[in-house]
Image (cartoon, helix red, strand yellow):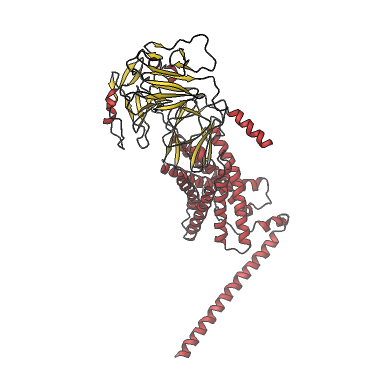
Length: 340
Length: 291
């Protein structure tokens, strides 16, 4: 039984081997025949024989043997490709939404630039707490004391509660005319004021800056020294020199600089000399003083600092050079050090 | 928005594949006409084998992938056309070299499928590499090139599988489409991985546009050589500011003495920026986001 099986397997193996040899022979003979034909026909192709070495008969990708499209169809295909590219390009075009009137645009991420139109009457910012947003934002509690009053095609914003965390263009302000593209931070909410009718450069913030009350300082005896710092009142060209080493500012007559305003405490702040520098200190717990938009209790003043308190703001200017060197000079010094 | 970018990138990959296929179709006719009229003795069929196929595949893919960023940021047509021209040139050279190398591998008894796979991988690597090379001042980003290579390898594998199961469509159309799709999909996925910050334009002509900070450094200005082009704004210089990443911080630097850069309405020379910061460049207002 076993011998019969093994004999059978032997026969199978032999027949398979014979079949393989026969197949190889036929292919070989066919190949030889082909070569012979090619050698006869290919006499004239001898000049390109060198190139044939690099360009063998085997297709590498086998992408195009017989093309499916004719030239016209291919050109139509390219027109389609260009059209698709144009559509994709056009879809990426920034879409500017046209707004009919003034309003706030919500800038917080995930709010899809929600636009909040404003009424053309006096109203408070309390309505912001009722706006439906994707995320609940923490807002100031006394927004009913922040009013928006229509003023010459724009709005006058007044904050009657100084404890509100209200920033306009990232600076604490209590009273200002809103210009197009002003950024308002009200608690966690970031708003962009849009006034498409009047561009920012055509709006002046005079109502917020020009004080409606008298400001009087200590009159200097004789000429003022060049190094004496001055306070330049915003909205006016009035300069008040700090002739004393300690200058108190407030609404009462006992101060060195008297500002007749109900928004300012009787003794609001003092500016005094410490060595070669000047320091500012808030004196009233109920009222605030801000330097460069940040609320302070006391702070050393630098040249050009903007001080605001009540409904007034001024610039602290000293002739003493305390500024950083300009950028161009910095670069030059770097170059010099490299050279050395 | 990041998903939209991946979709945009993938679509462009498909268009790139289609473009390659179109070039192969028209290429055959052009070479055939050329062989009949100019080189009647030269058997164009030989040239048809691997060289021009690789060149034309690289031409189509390179042309579209080079213009990918410009199309996303809606740059002007001249810039897009010039990018496409550069892409076509570099892509065709890349394609030629990659497929000649693949053919040489085949000559050196490497399995045809393996050699083709290597060719596709190299094509993905070099096409994305050339894109990075010509991408303004952002510099070359290695992960991006590697992702291009991975995309090329996977695309090549799909191409081989389609050939194996004879599902290639007319003249390997599906294979080419999927190679383009794969390369651009992997670039898109890598960009998504790298993008965690963005600048959103708040005002003016480009209002609402998002600039993704997916590279290590960028330039801002009105000049067309910049990565982020601010057009239609006043007081913006040609090369106004530079944004770069350093020690896990994103820093903005003023590049032009004549122009000002304001961060939260304060003039700065160099300043690290944080989530929610408002940047003012000329009359353009931008907001910095972490996304």
